[in-house]
Length: 552
Image (cartoon, rainbow, N blue to C red; front, side, top):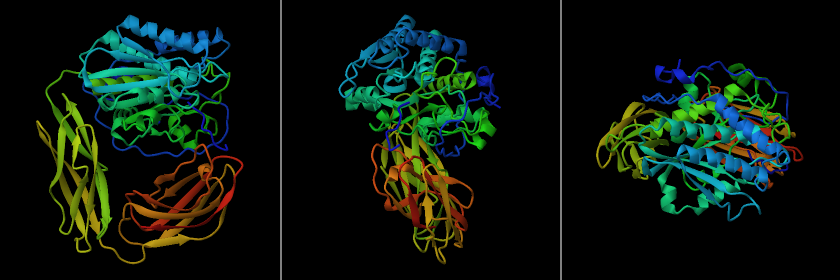
């Protein structure tokens, strides 16, 4: 995984073969540098696949890791993208894929890559609808300081073994499966960005989902999923949730690996990581095992990132999670064209006179994608209007539904039916709307100054006396005197105890914070204690929280 430049993630019987190691991992790692890691509760998991995917062989993954270690040993201890160690790594992966029946392409890492960088490697498995591509990837290069066995031999080797297993099984494909091994990730995600930029708009639109795997064997690791609440993450989330692992959002790795190149091009993305240099919390150690207060990977970007720097249990599960996602999305017998729709979240609350939103997701369940027109069929309370943006999507896409209530909208709970009319079928889903009256003061302020020190966290609270449910999104205004806003991670804690990350740290430059306003989607009561938590994740710049307010 690329380092951020700043001043300074009971199974159904169909999956029994995948759960031999369902007990949380207990591998230990020494303490490392502290960085704040926020958790995000995952929603209800998706149903498990009817067609059981295979168990991905851990010994085979580790055999690939041993080969990458040997390659690094023979090339100055590194597999950096500009070295012979990278070229030999690519040749090893390429030869395995070609022998298994894949069509492979070496795609030049230009423009914008480091001078002398080796190419990306793309592998396509024959079959499936080529207008619906399910793609997975991992970066193959290491930093110059070491062999990069966890970062990212783990993701590359796991990806290779999943690809080889697919070839060995040769199932019927409903969608087209593609894999990618990226060059020059450690220099700034350059290889994947060059690949995405080389695609025509038509070819980009064919990629319906990209899953990324970067550092999936961290010795003191956890179970993190990129963009955990999105449709692209549903299968990975379902697999880990059904193992009882309670996966979390990959906040440490946000925008730091190759999924960012695809997401920035408008492609749905997710992926799995086990953590880098950030610190495992006590709560994470309690549910996942390992050492609280220690780094997920204390050998991150160091020469000790060798084959000894791997948690077998975490690595094994990542391979099975990817297999589950691919088999769910792309394996089966075509049964004609169809789609489904759902609302996320499935319910919401609003004060009369205010708007509320939800996302209407569509999924192509069989055959080719189709155009879906969205309408509200029934259930809107009086004085309420509905607007879809956009009103028409291609199945696999999403639309934002905004319900605007009026001051006269009656209090109560309503079941709103949303209809999707496609080219071959009509599908519906429901959304539960709760409306309550507005009364009393709704804005609360804390203007006590709090000093913000390096690598420290402060908490500032207000007590809301407002009645009913909070109007989502709540509005938060924050004034901070700090010369590097990029150092700061800001979270809001509601009366129910749920945390919402409203600003993340990280970046490549420093700007003054000043006053900023946020809209924060919430689903909880308005009354009680709301807390603003500010964490300074980097050294050199300090400051203080002047004042903040929340309108609920």
